[in-house]
Length: 346
Image 1 (spheres, rainbow, N blue to C red):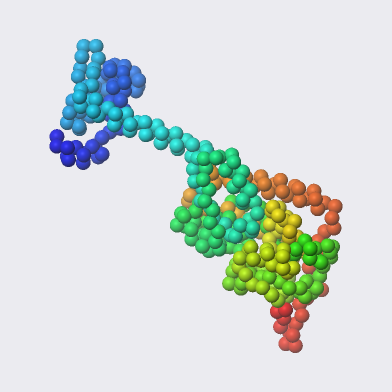
Image 2: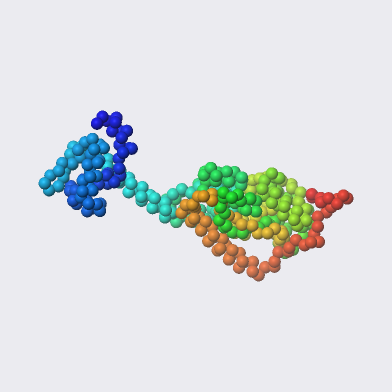
């Protein structure tokens, strides 16, 4: 058979069952022993070798009285056949490692990192437990992360559902509940106060996100529902690092979510102020495609976050158990209105 013809025929017509029988006969030098090794009858082994020889167009074994020996063609074919099964064994081992979470790649997306304080610690724990795992993290706005999910560029997106409406093709795995709060530097005069009113906080300088981002819209909805005026911003920035810097180093107030200022490393630089905004708790969730089964690594990461949340919640509750409760926004704290009765944006 011409070489060009065999090159085209071999990938299309080679049967793995026949190749498996060939390797067994090669190893045992006997159709009878090979049949026992692969759990077939001897006639089935004989038929498989005959089919393989017919497809290749060459004789692979010489039949002797007490067994078989490979021909020159059989000896030439043998290393490639053995290599195929060795690669298949390695593939099975790799699949087993990925299934156990011992190896693999996890691609996740999140909003700017300080917003999800447990994620760096969870990734640290995951990679410590699975040294052969690789984790890729991208930061982006919620809408971009959802698009990346749908393109399968990432497997998980860590989002605050207070800022995002879940579509039918997405699945949310709740990690913890989040709530809006007001934050300041630990050195700010308000940090030592046990009671604060909204009007006196409005007199301070604030750093706020721009009006075209989800977080600003969430803040605005919360204040509108409570009848509280929006603070006048001195600095505007979408970057969480800039907002954090203006609070911790610039003496400004800002809005934040509760978890970074309760559980995150470095939380001592920024503190929650004792003023409870009347916003319901909303979950932070791991968002994935509904039709996609999460990988073992993804499941492990979610488990790590939940474990960290549980431990941090217990620690925070114990620390705050003897402190006075936050002052809730009272009905009498209404925003200033102008002569036409419109709410003033201070």
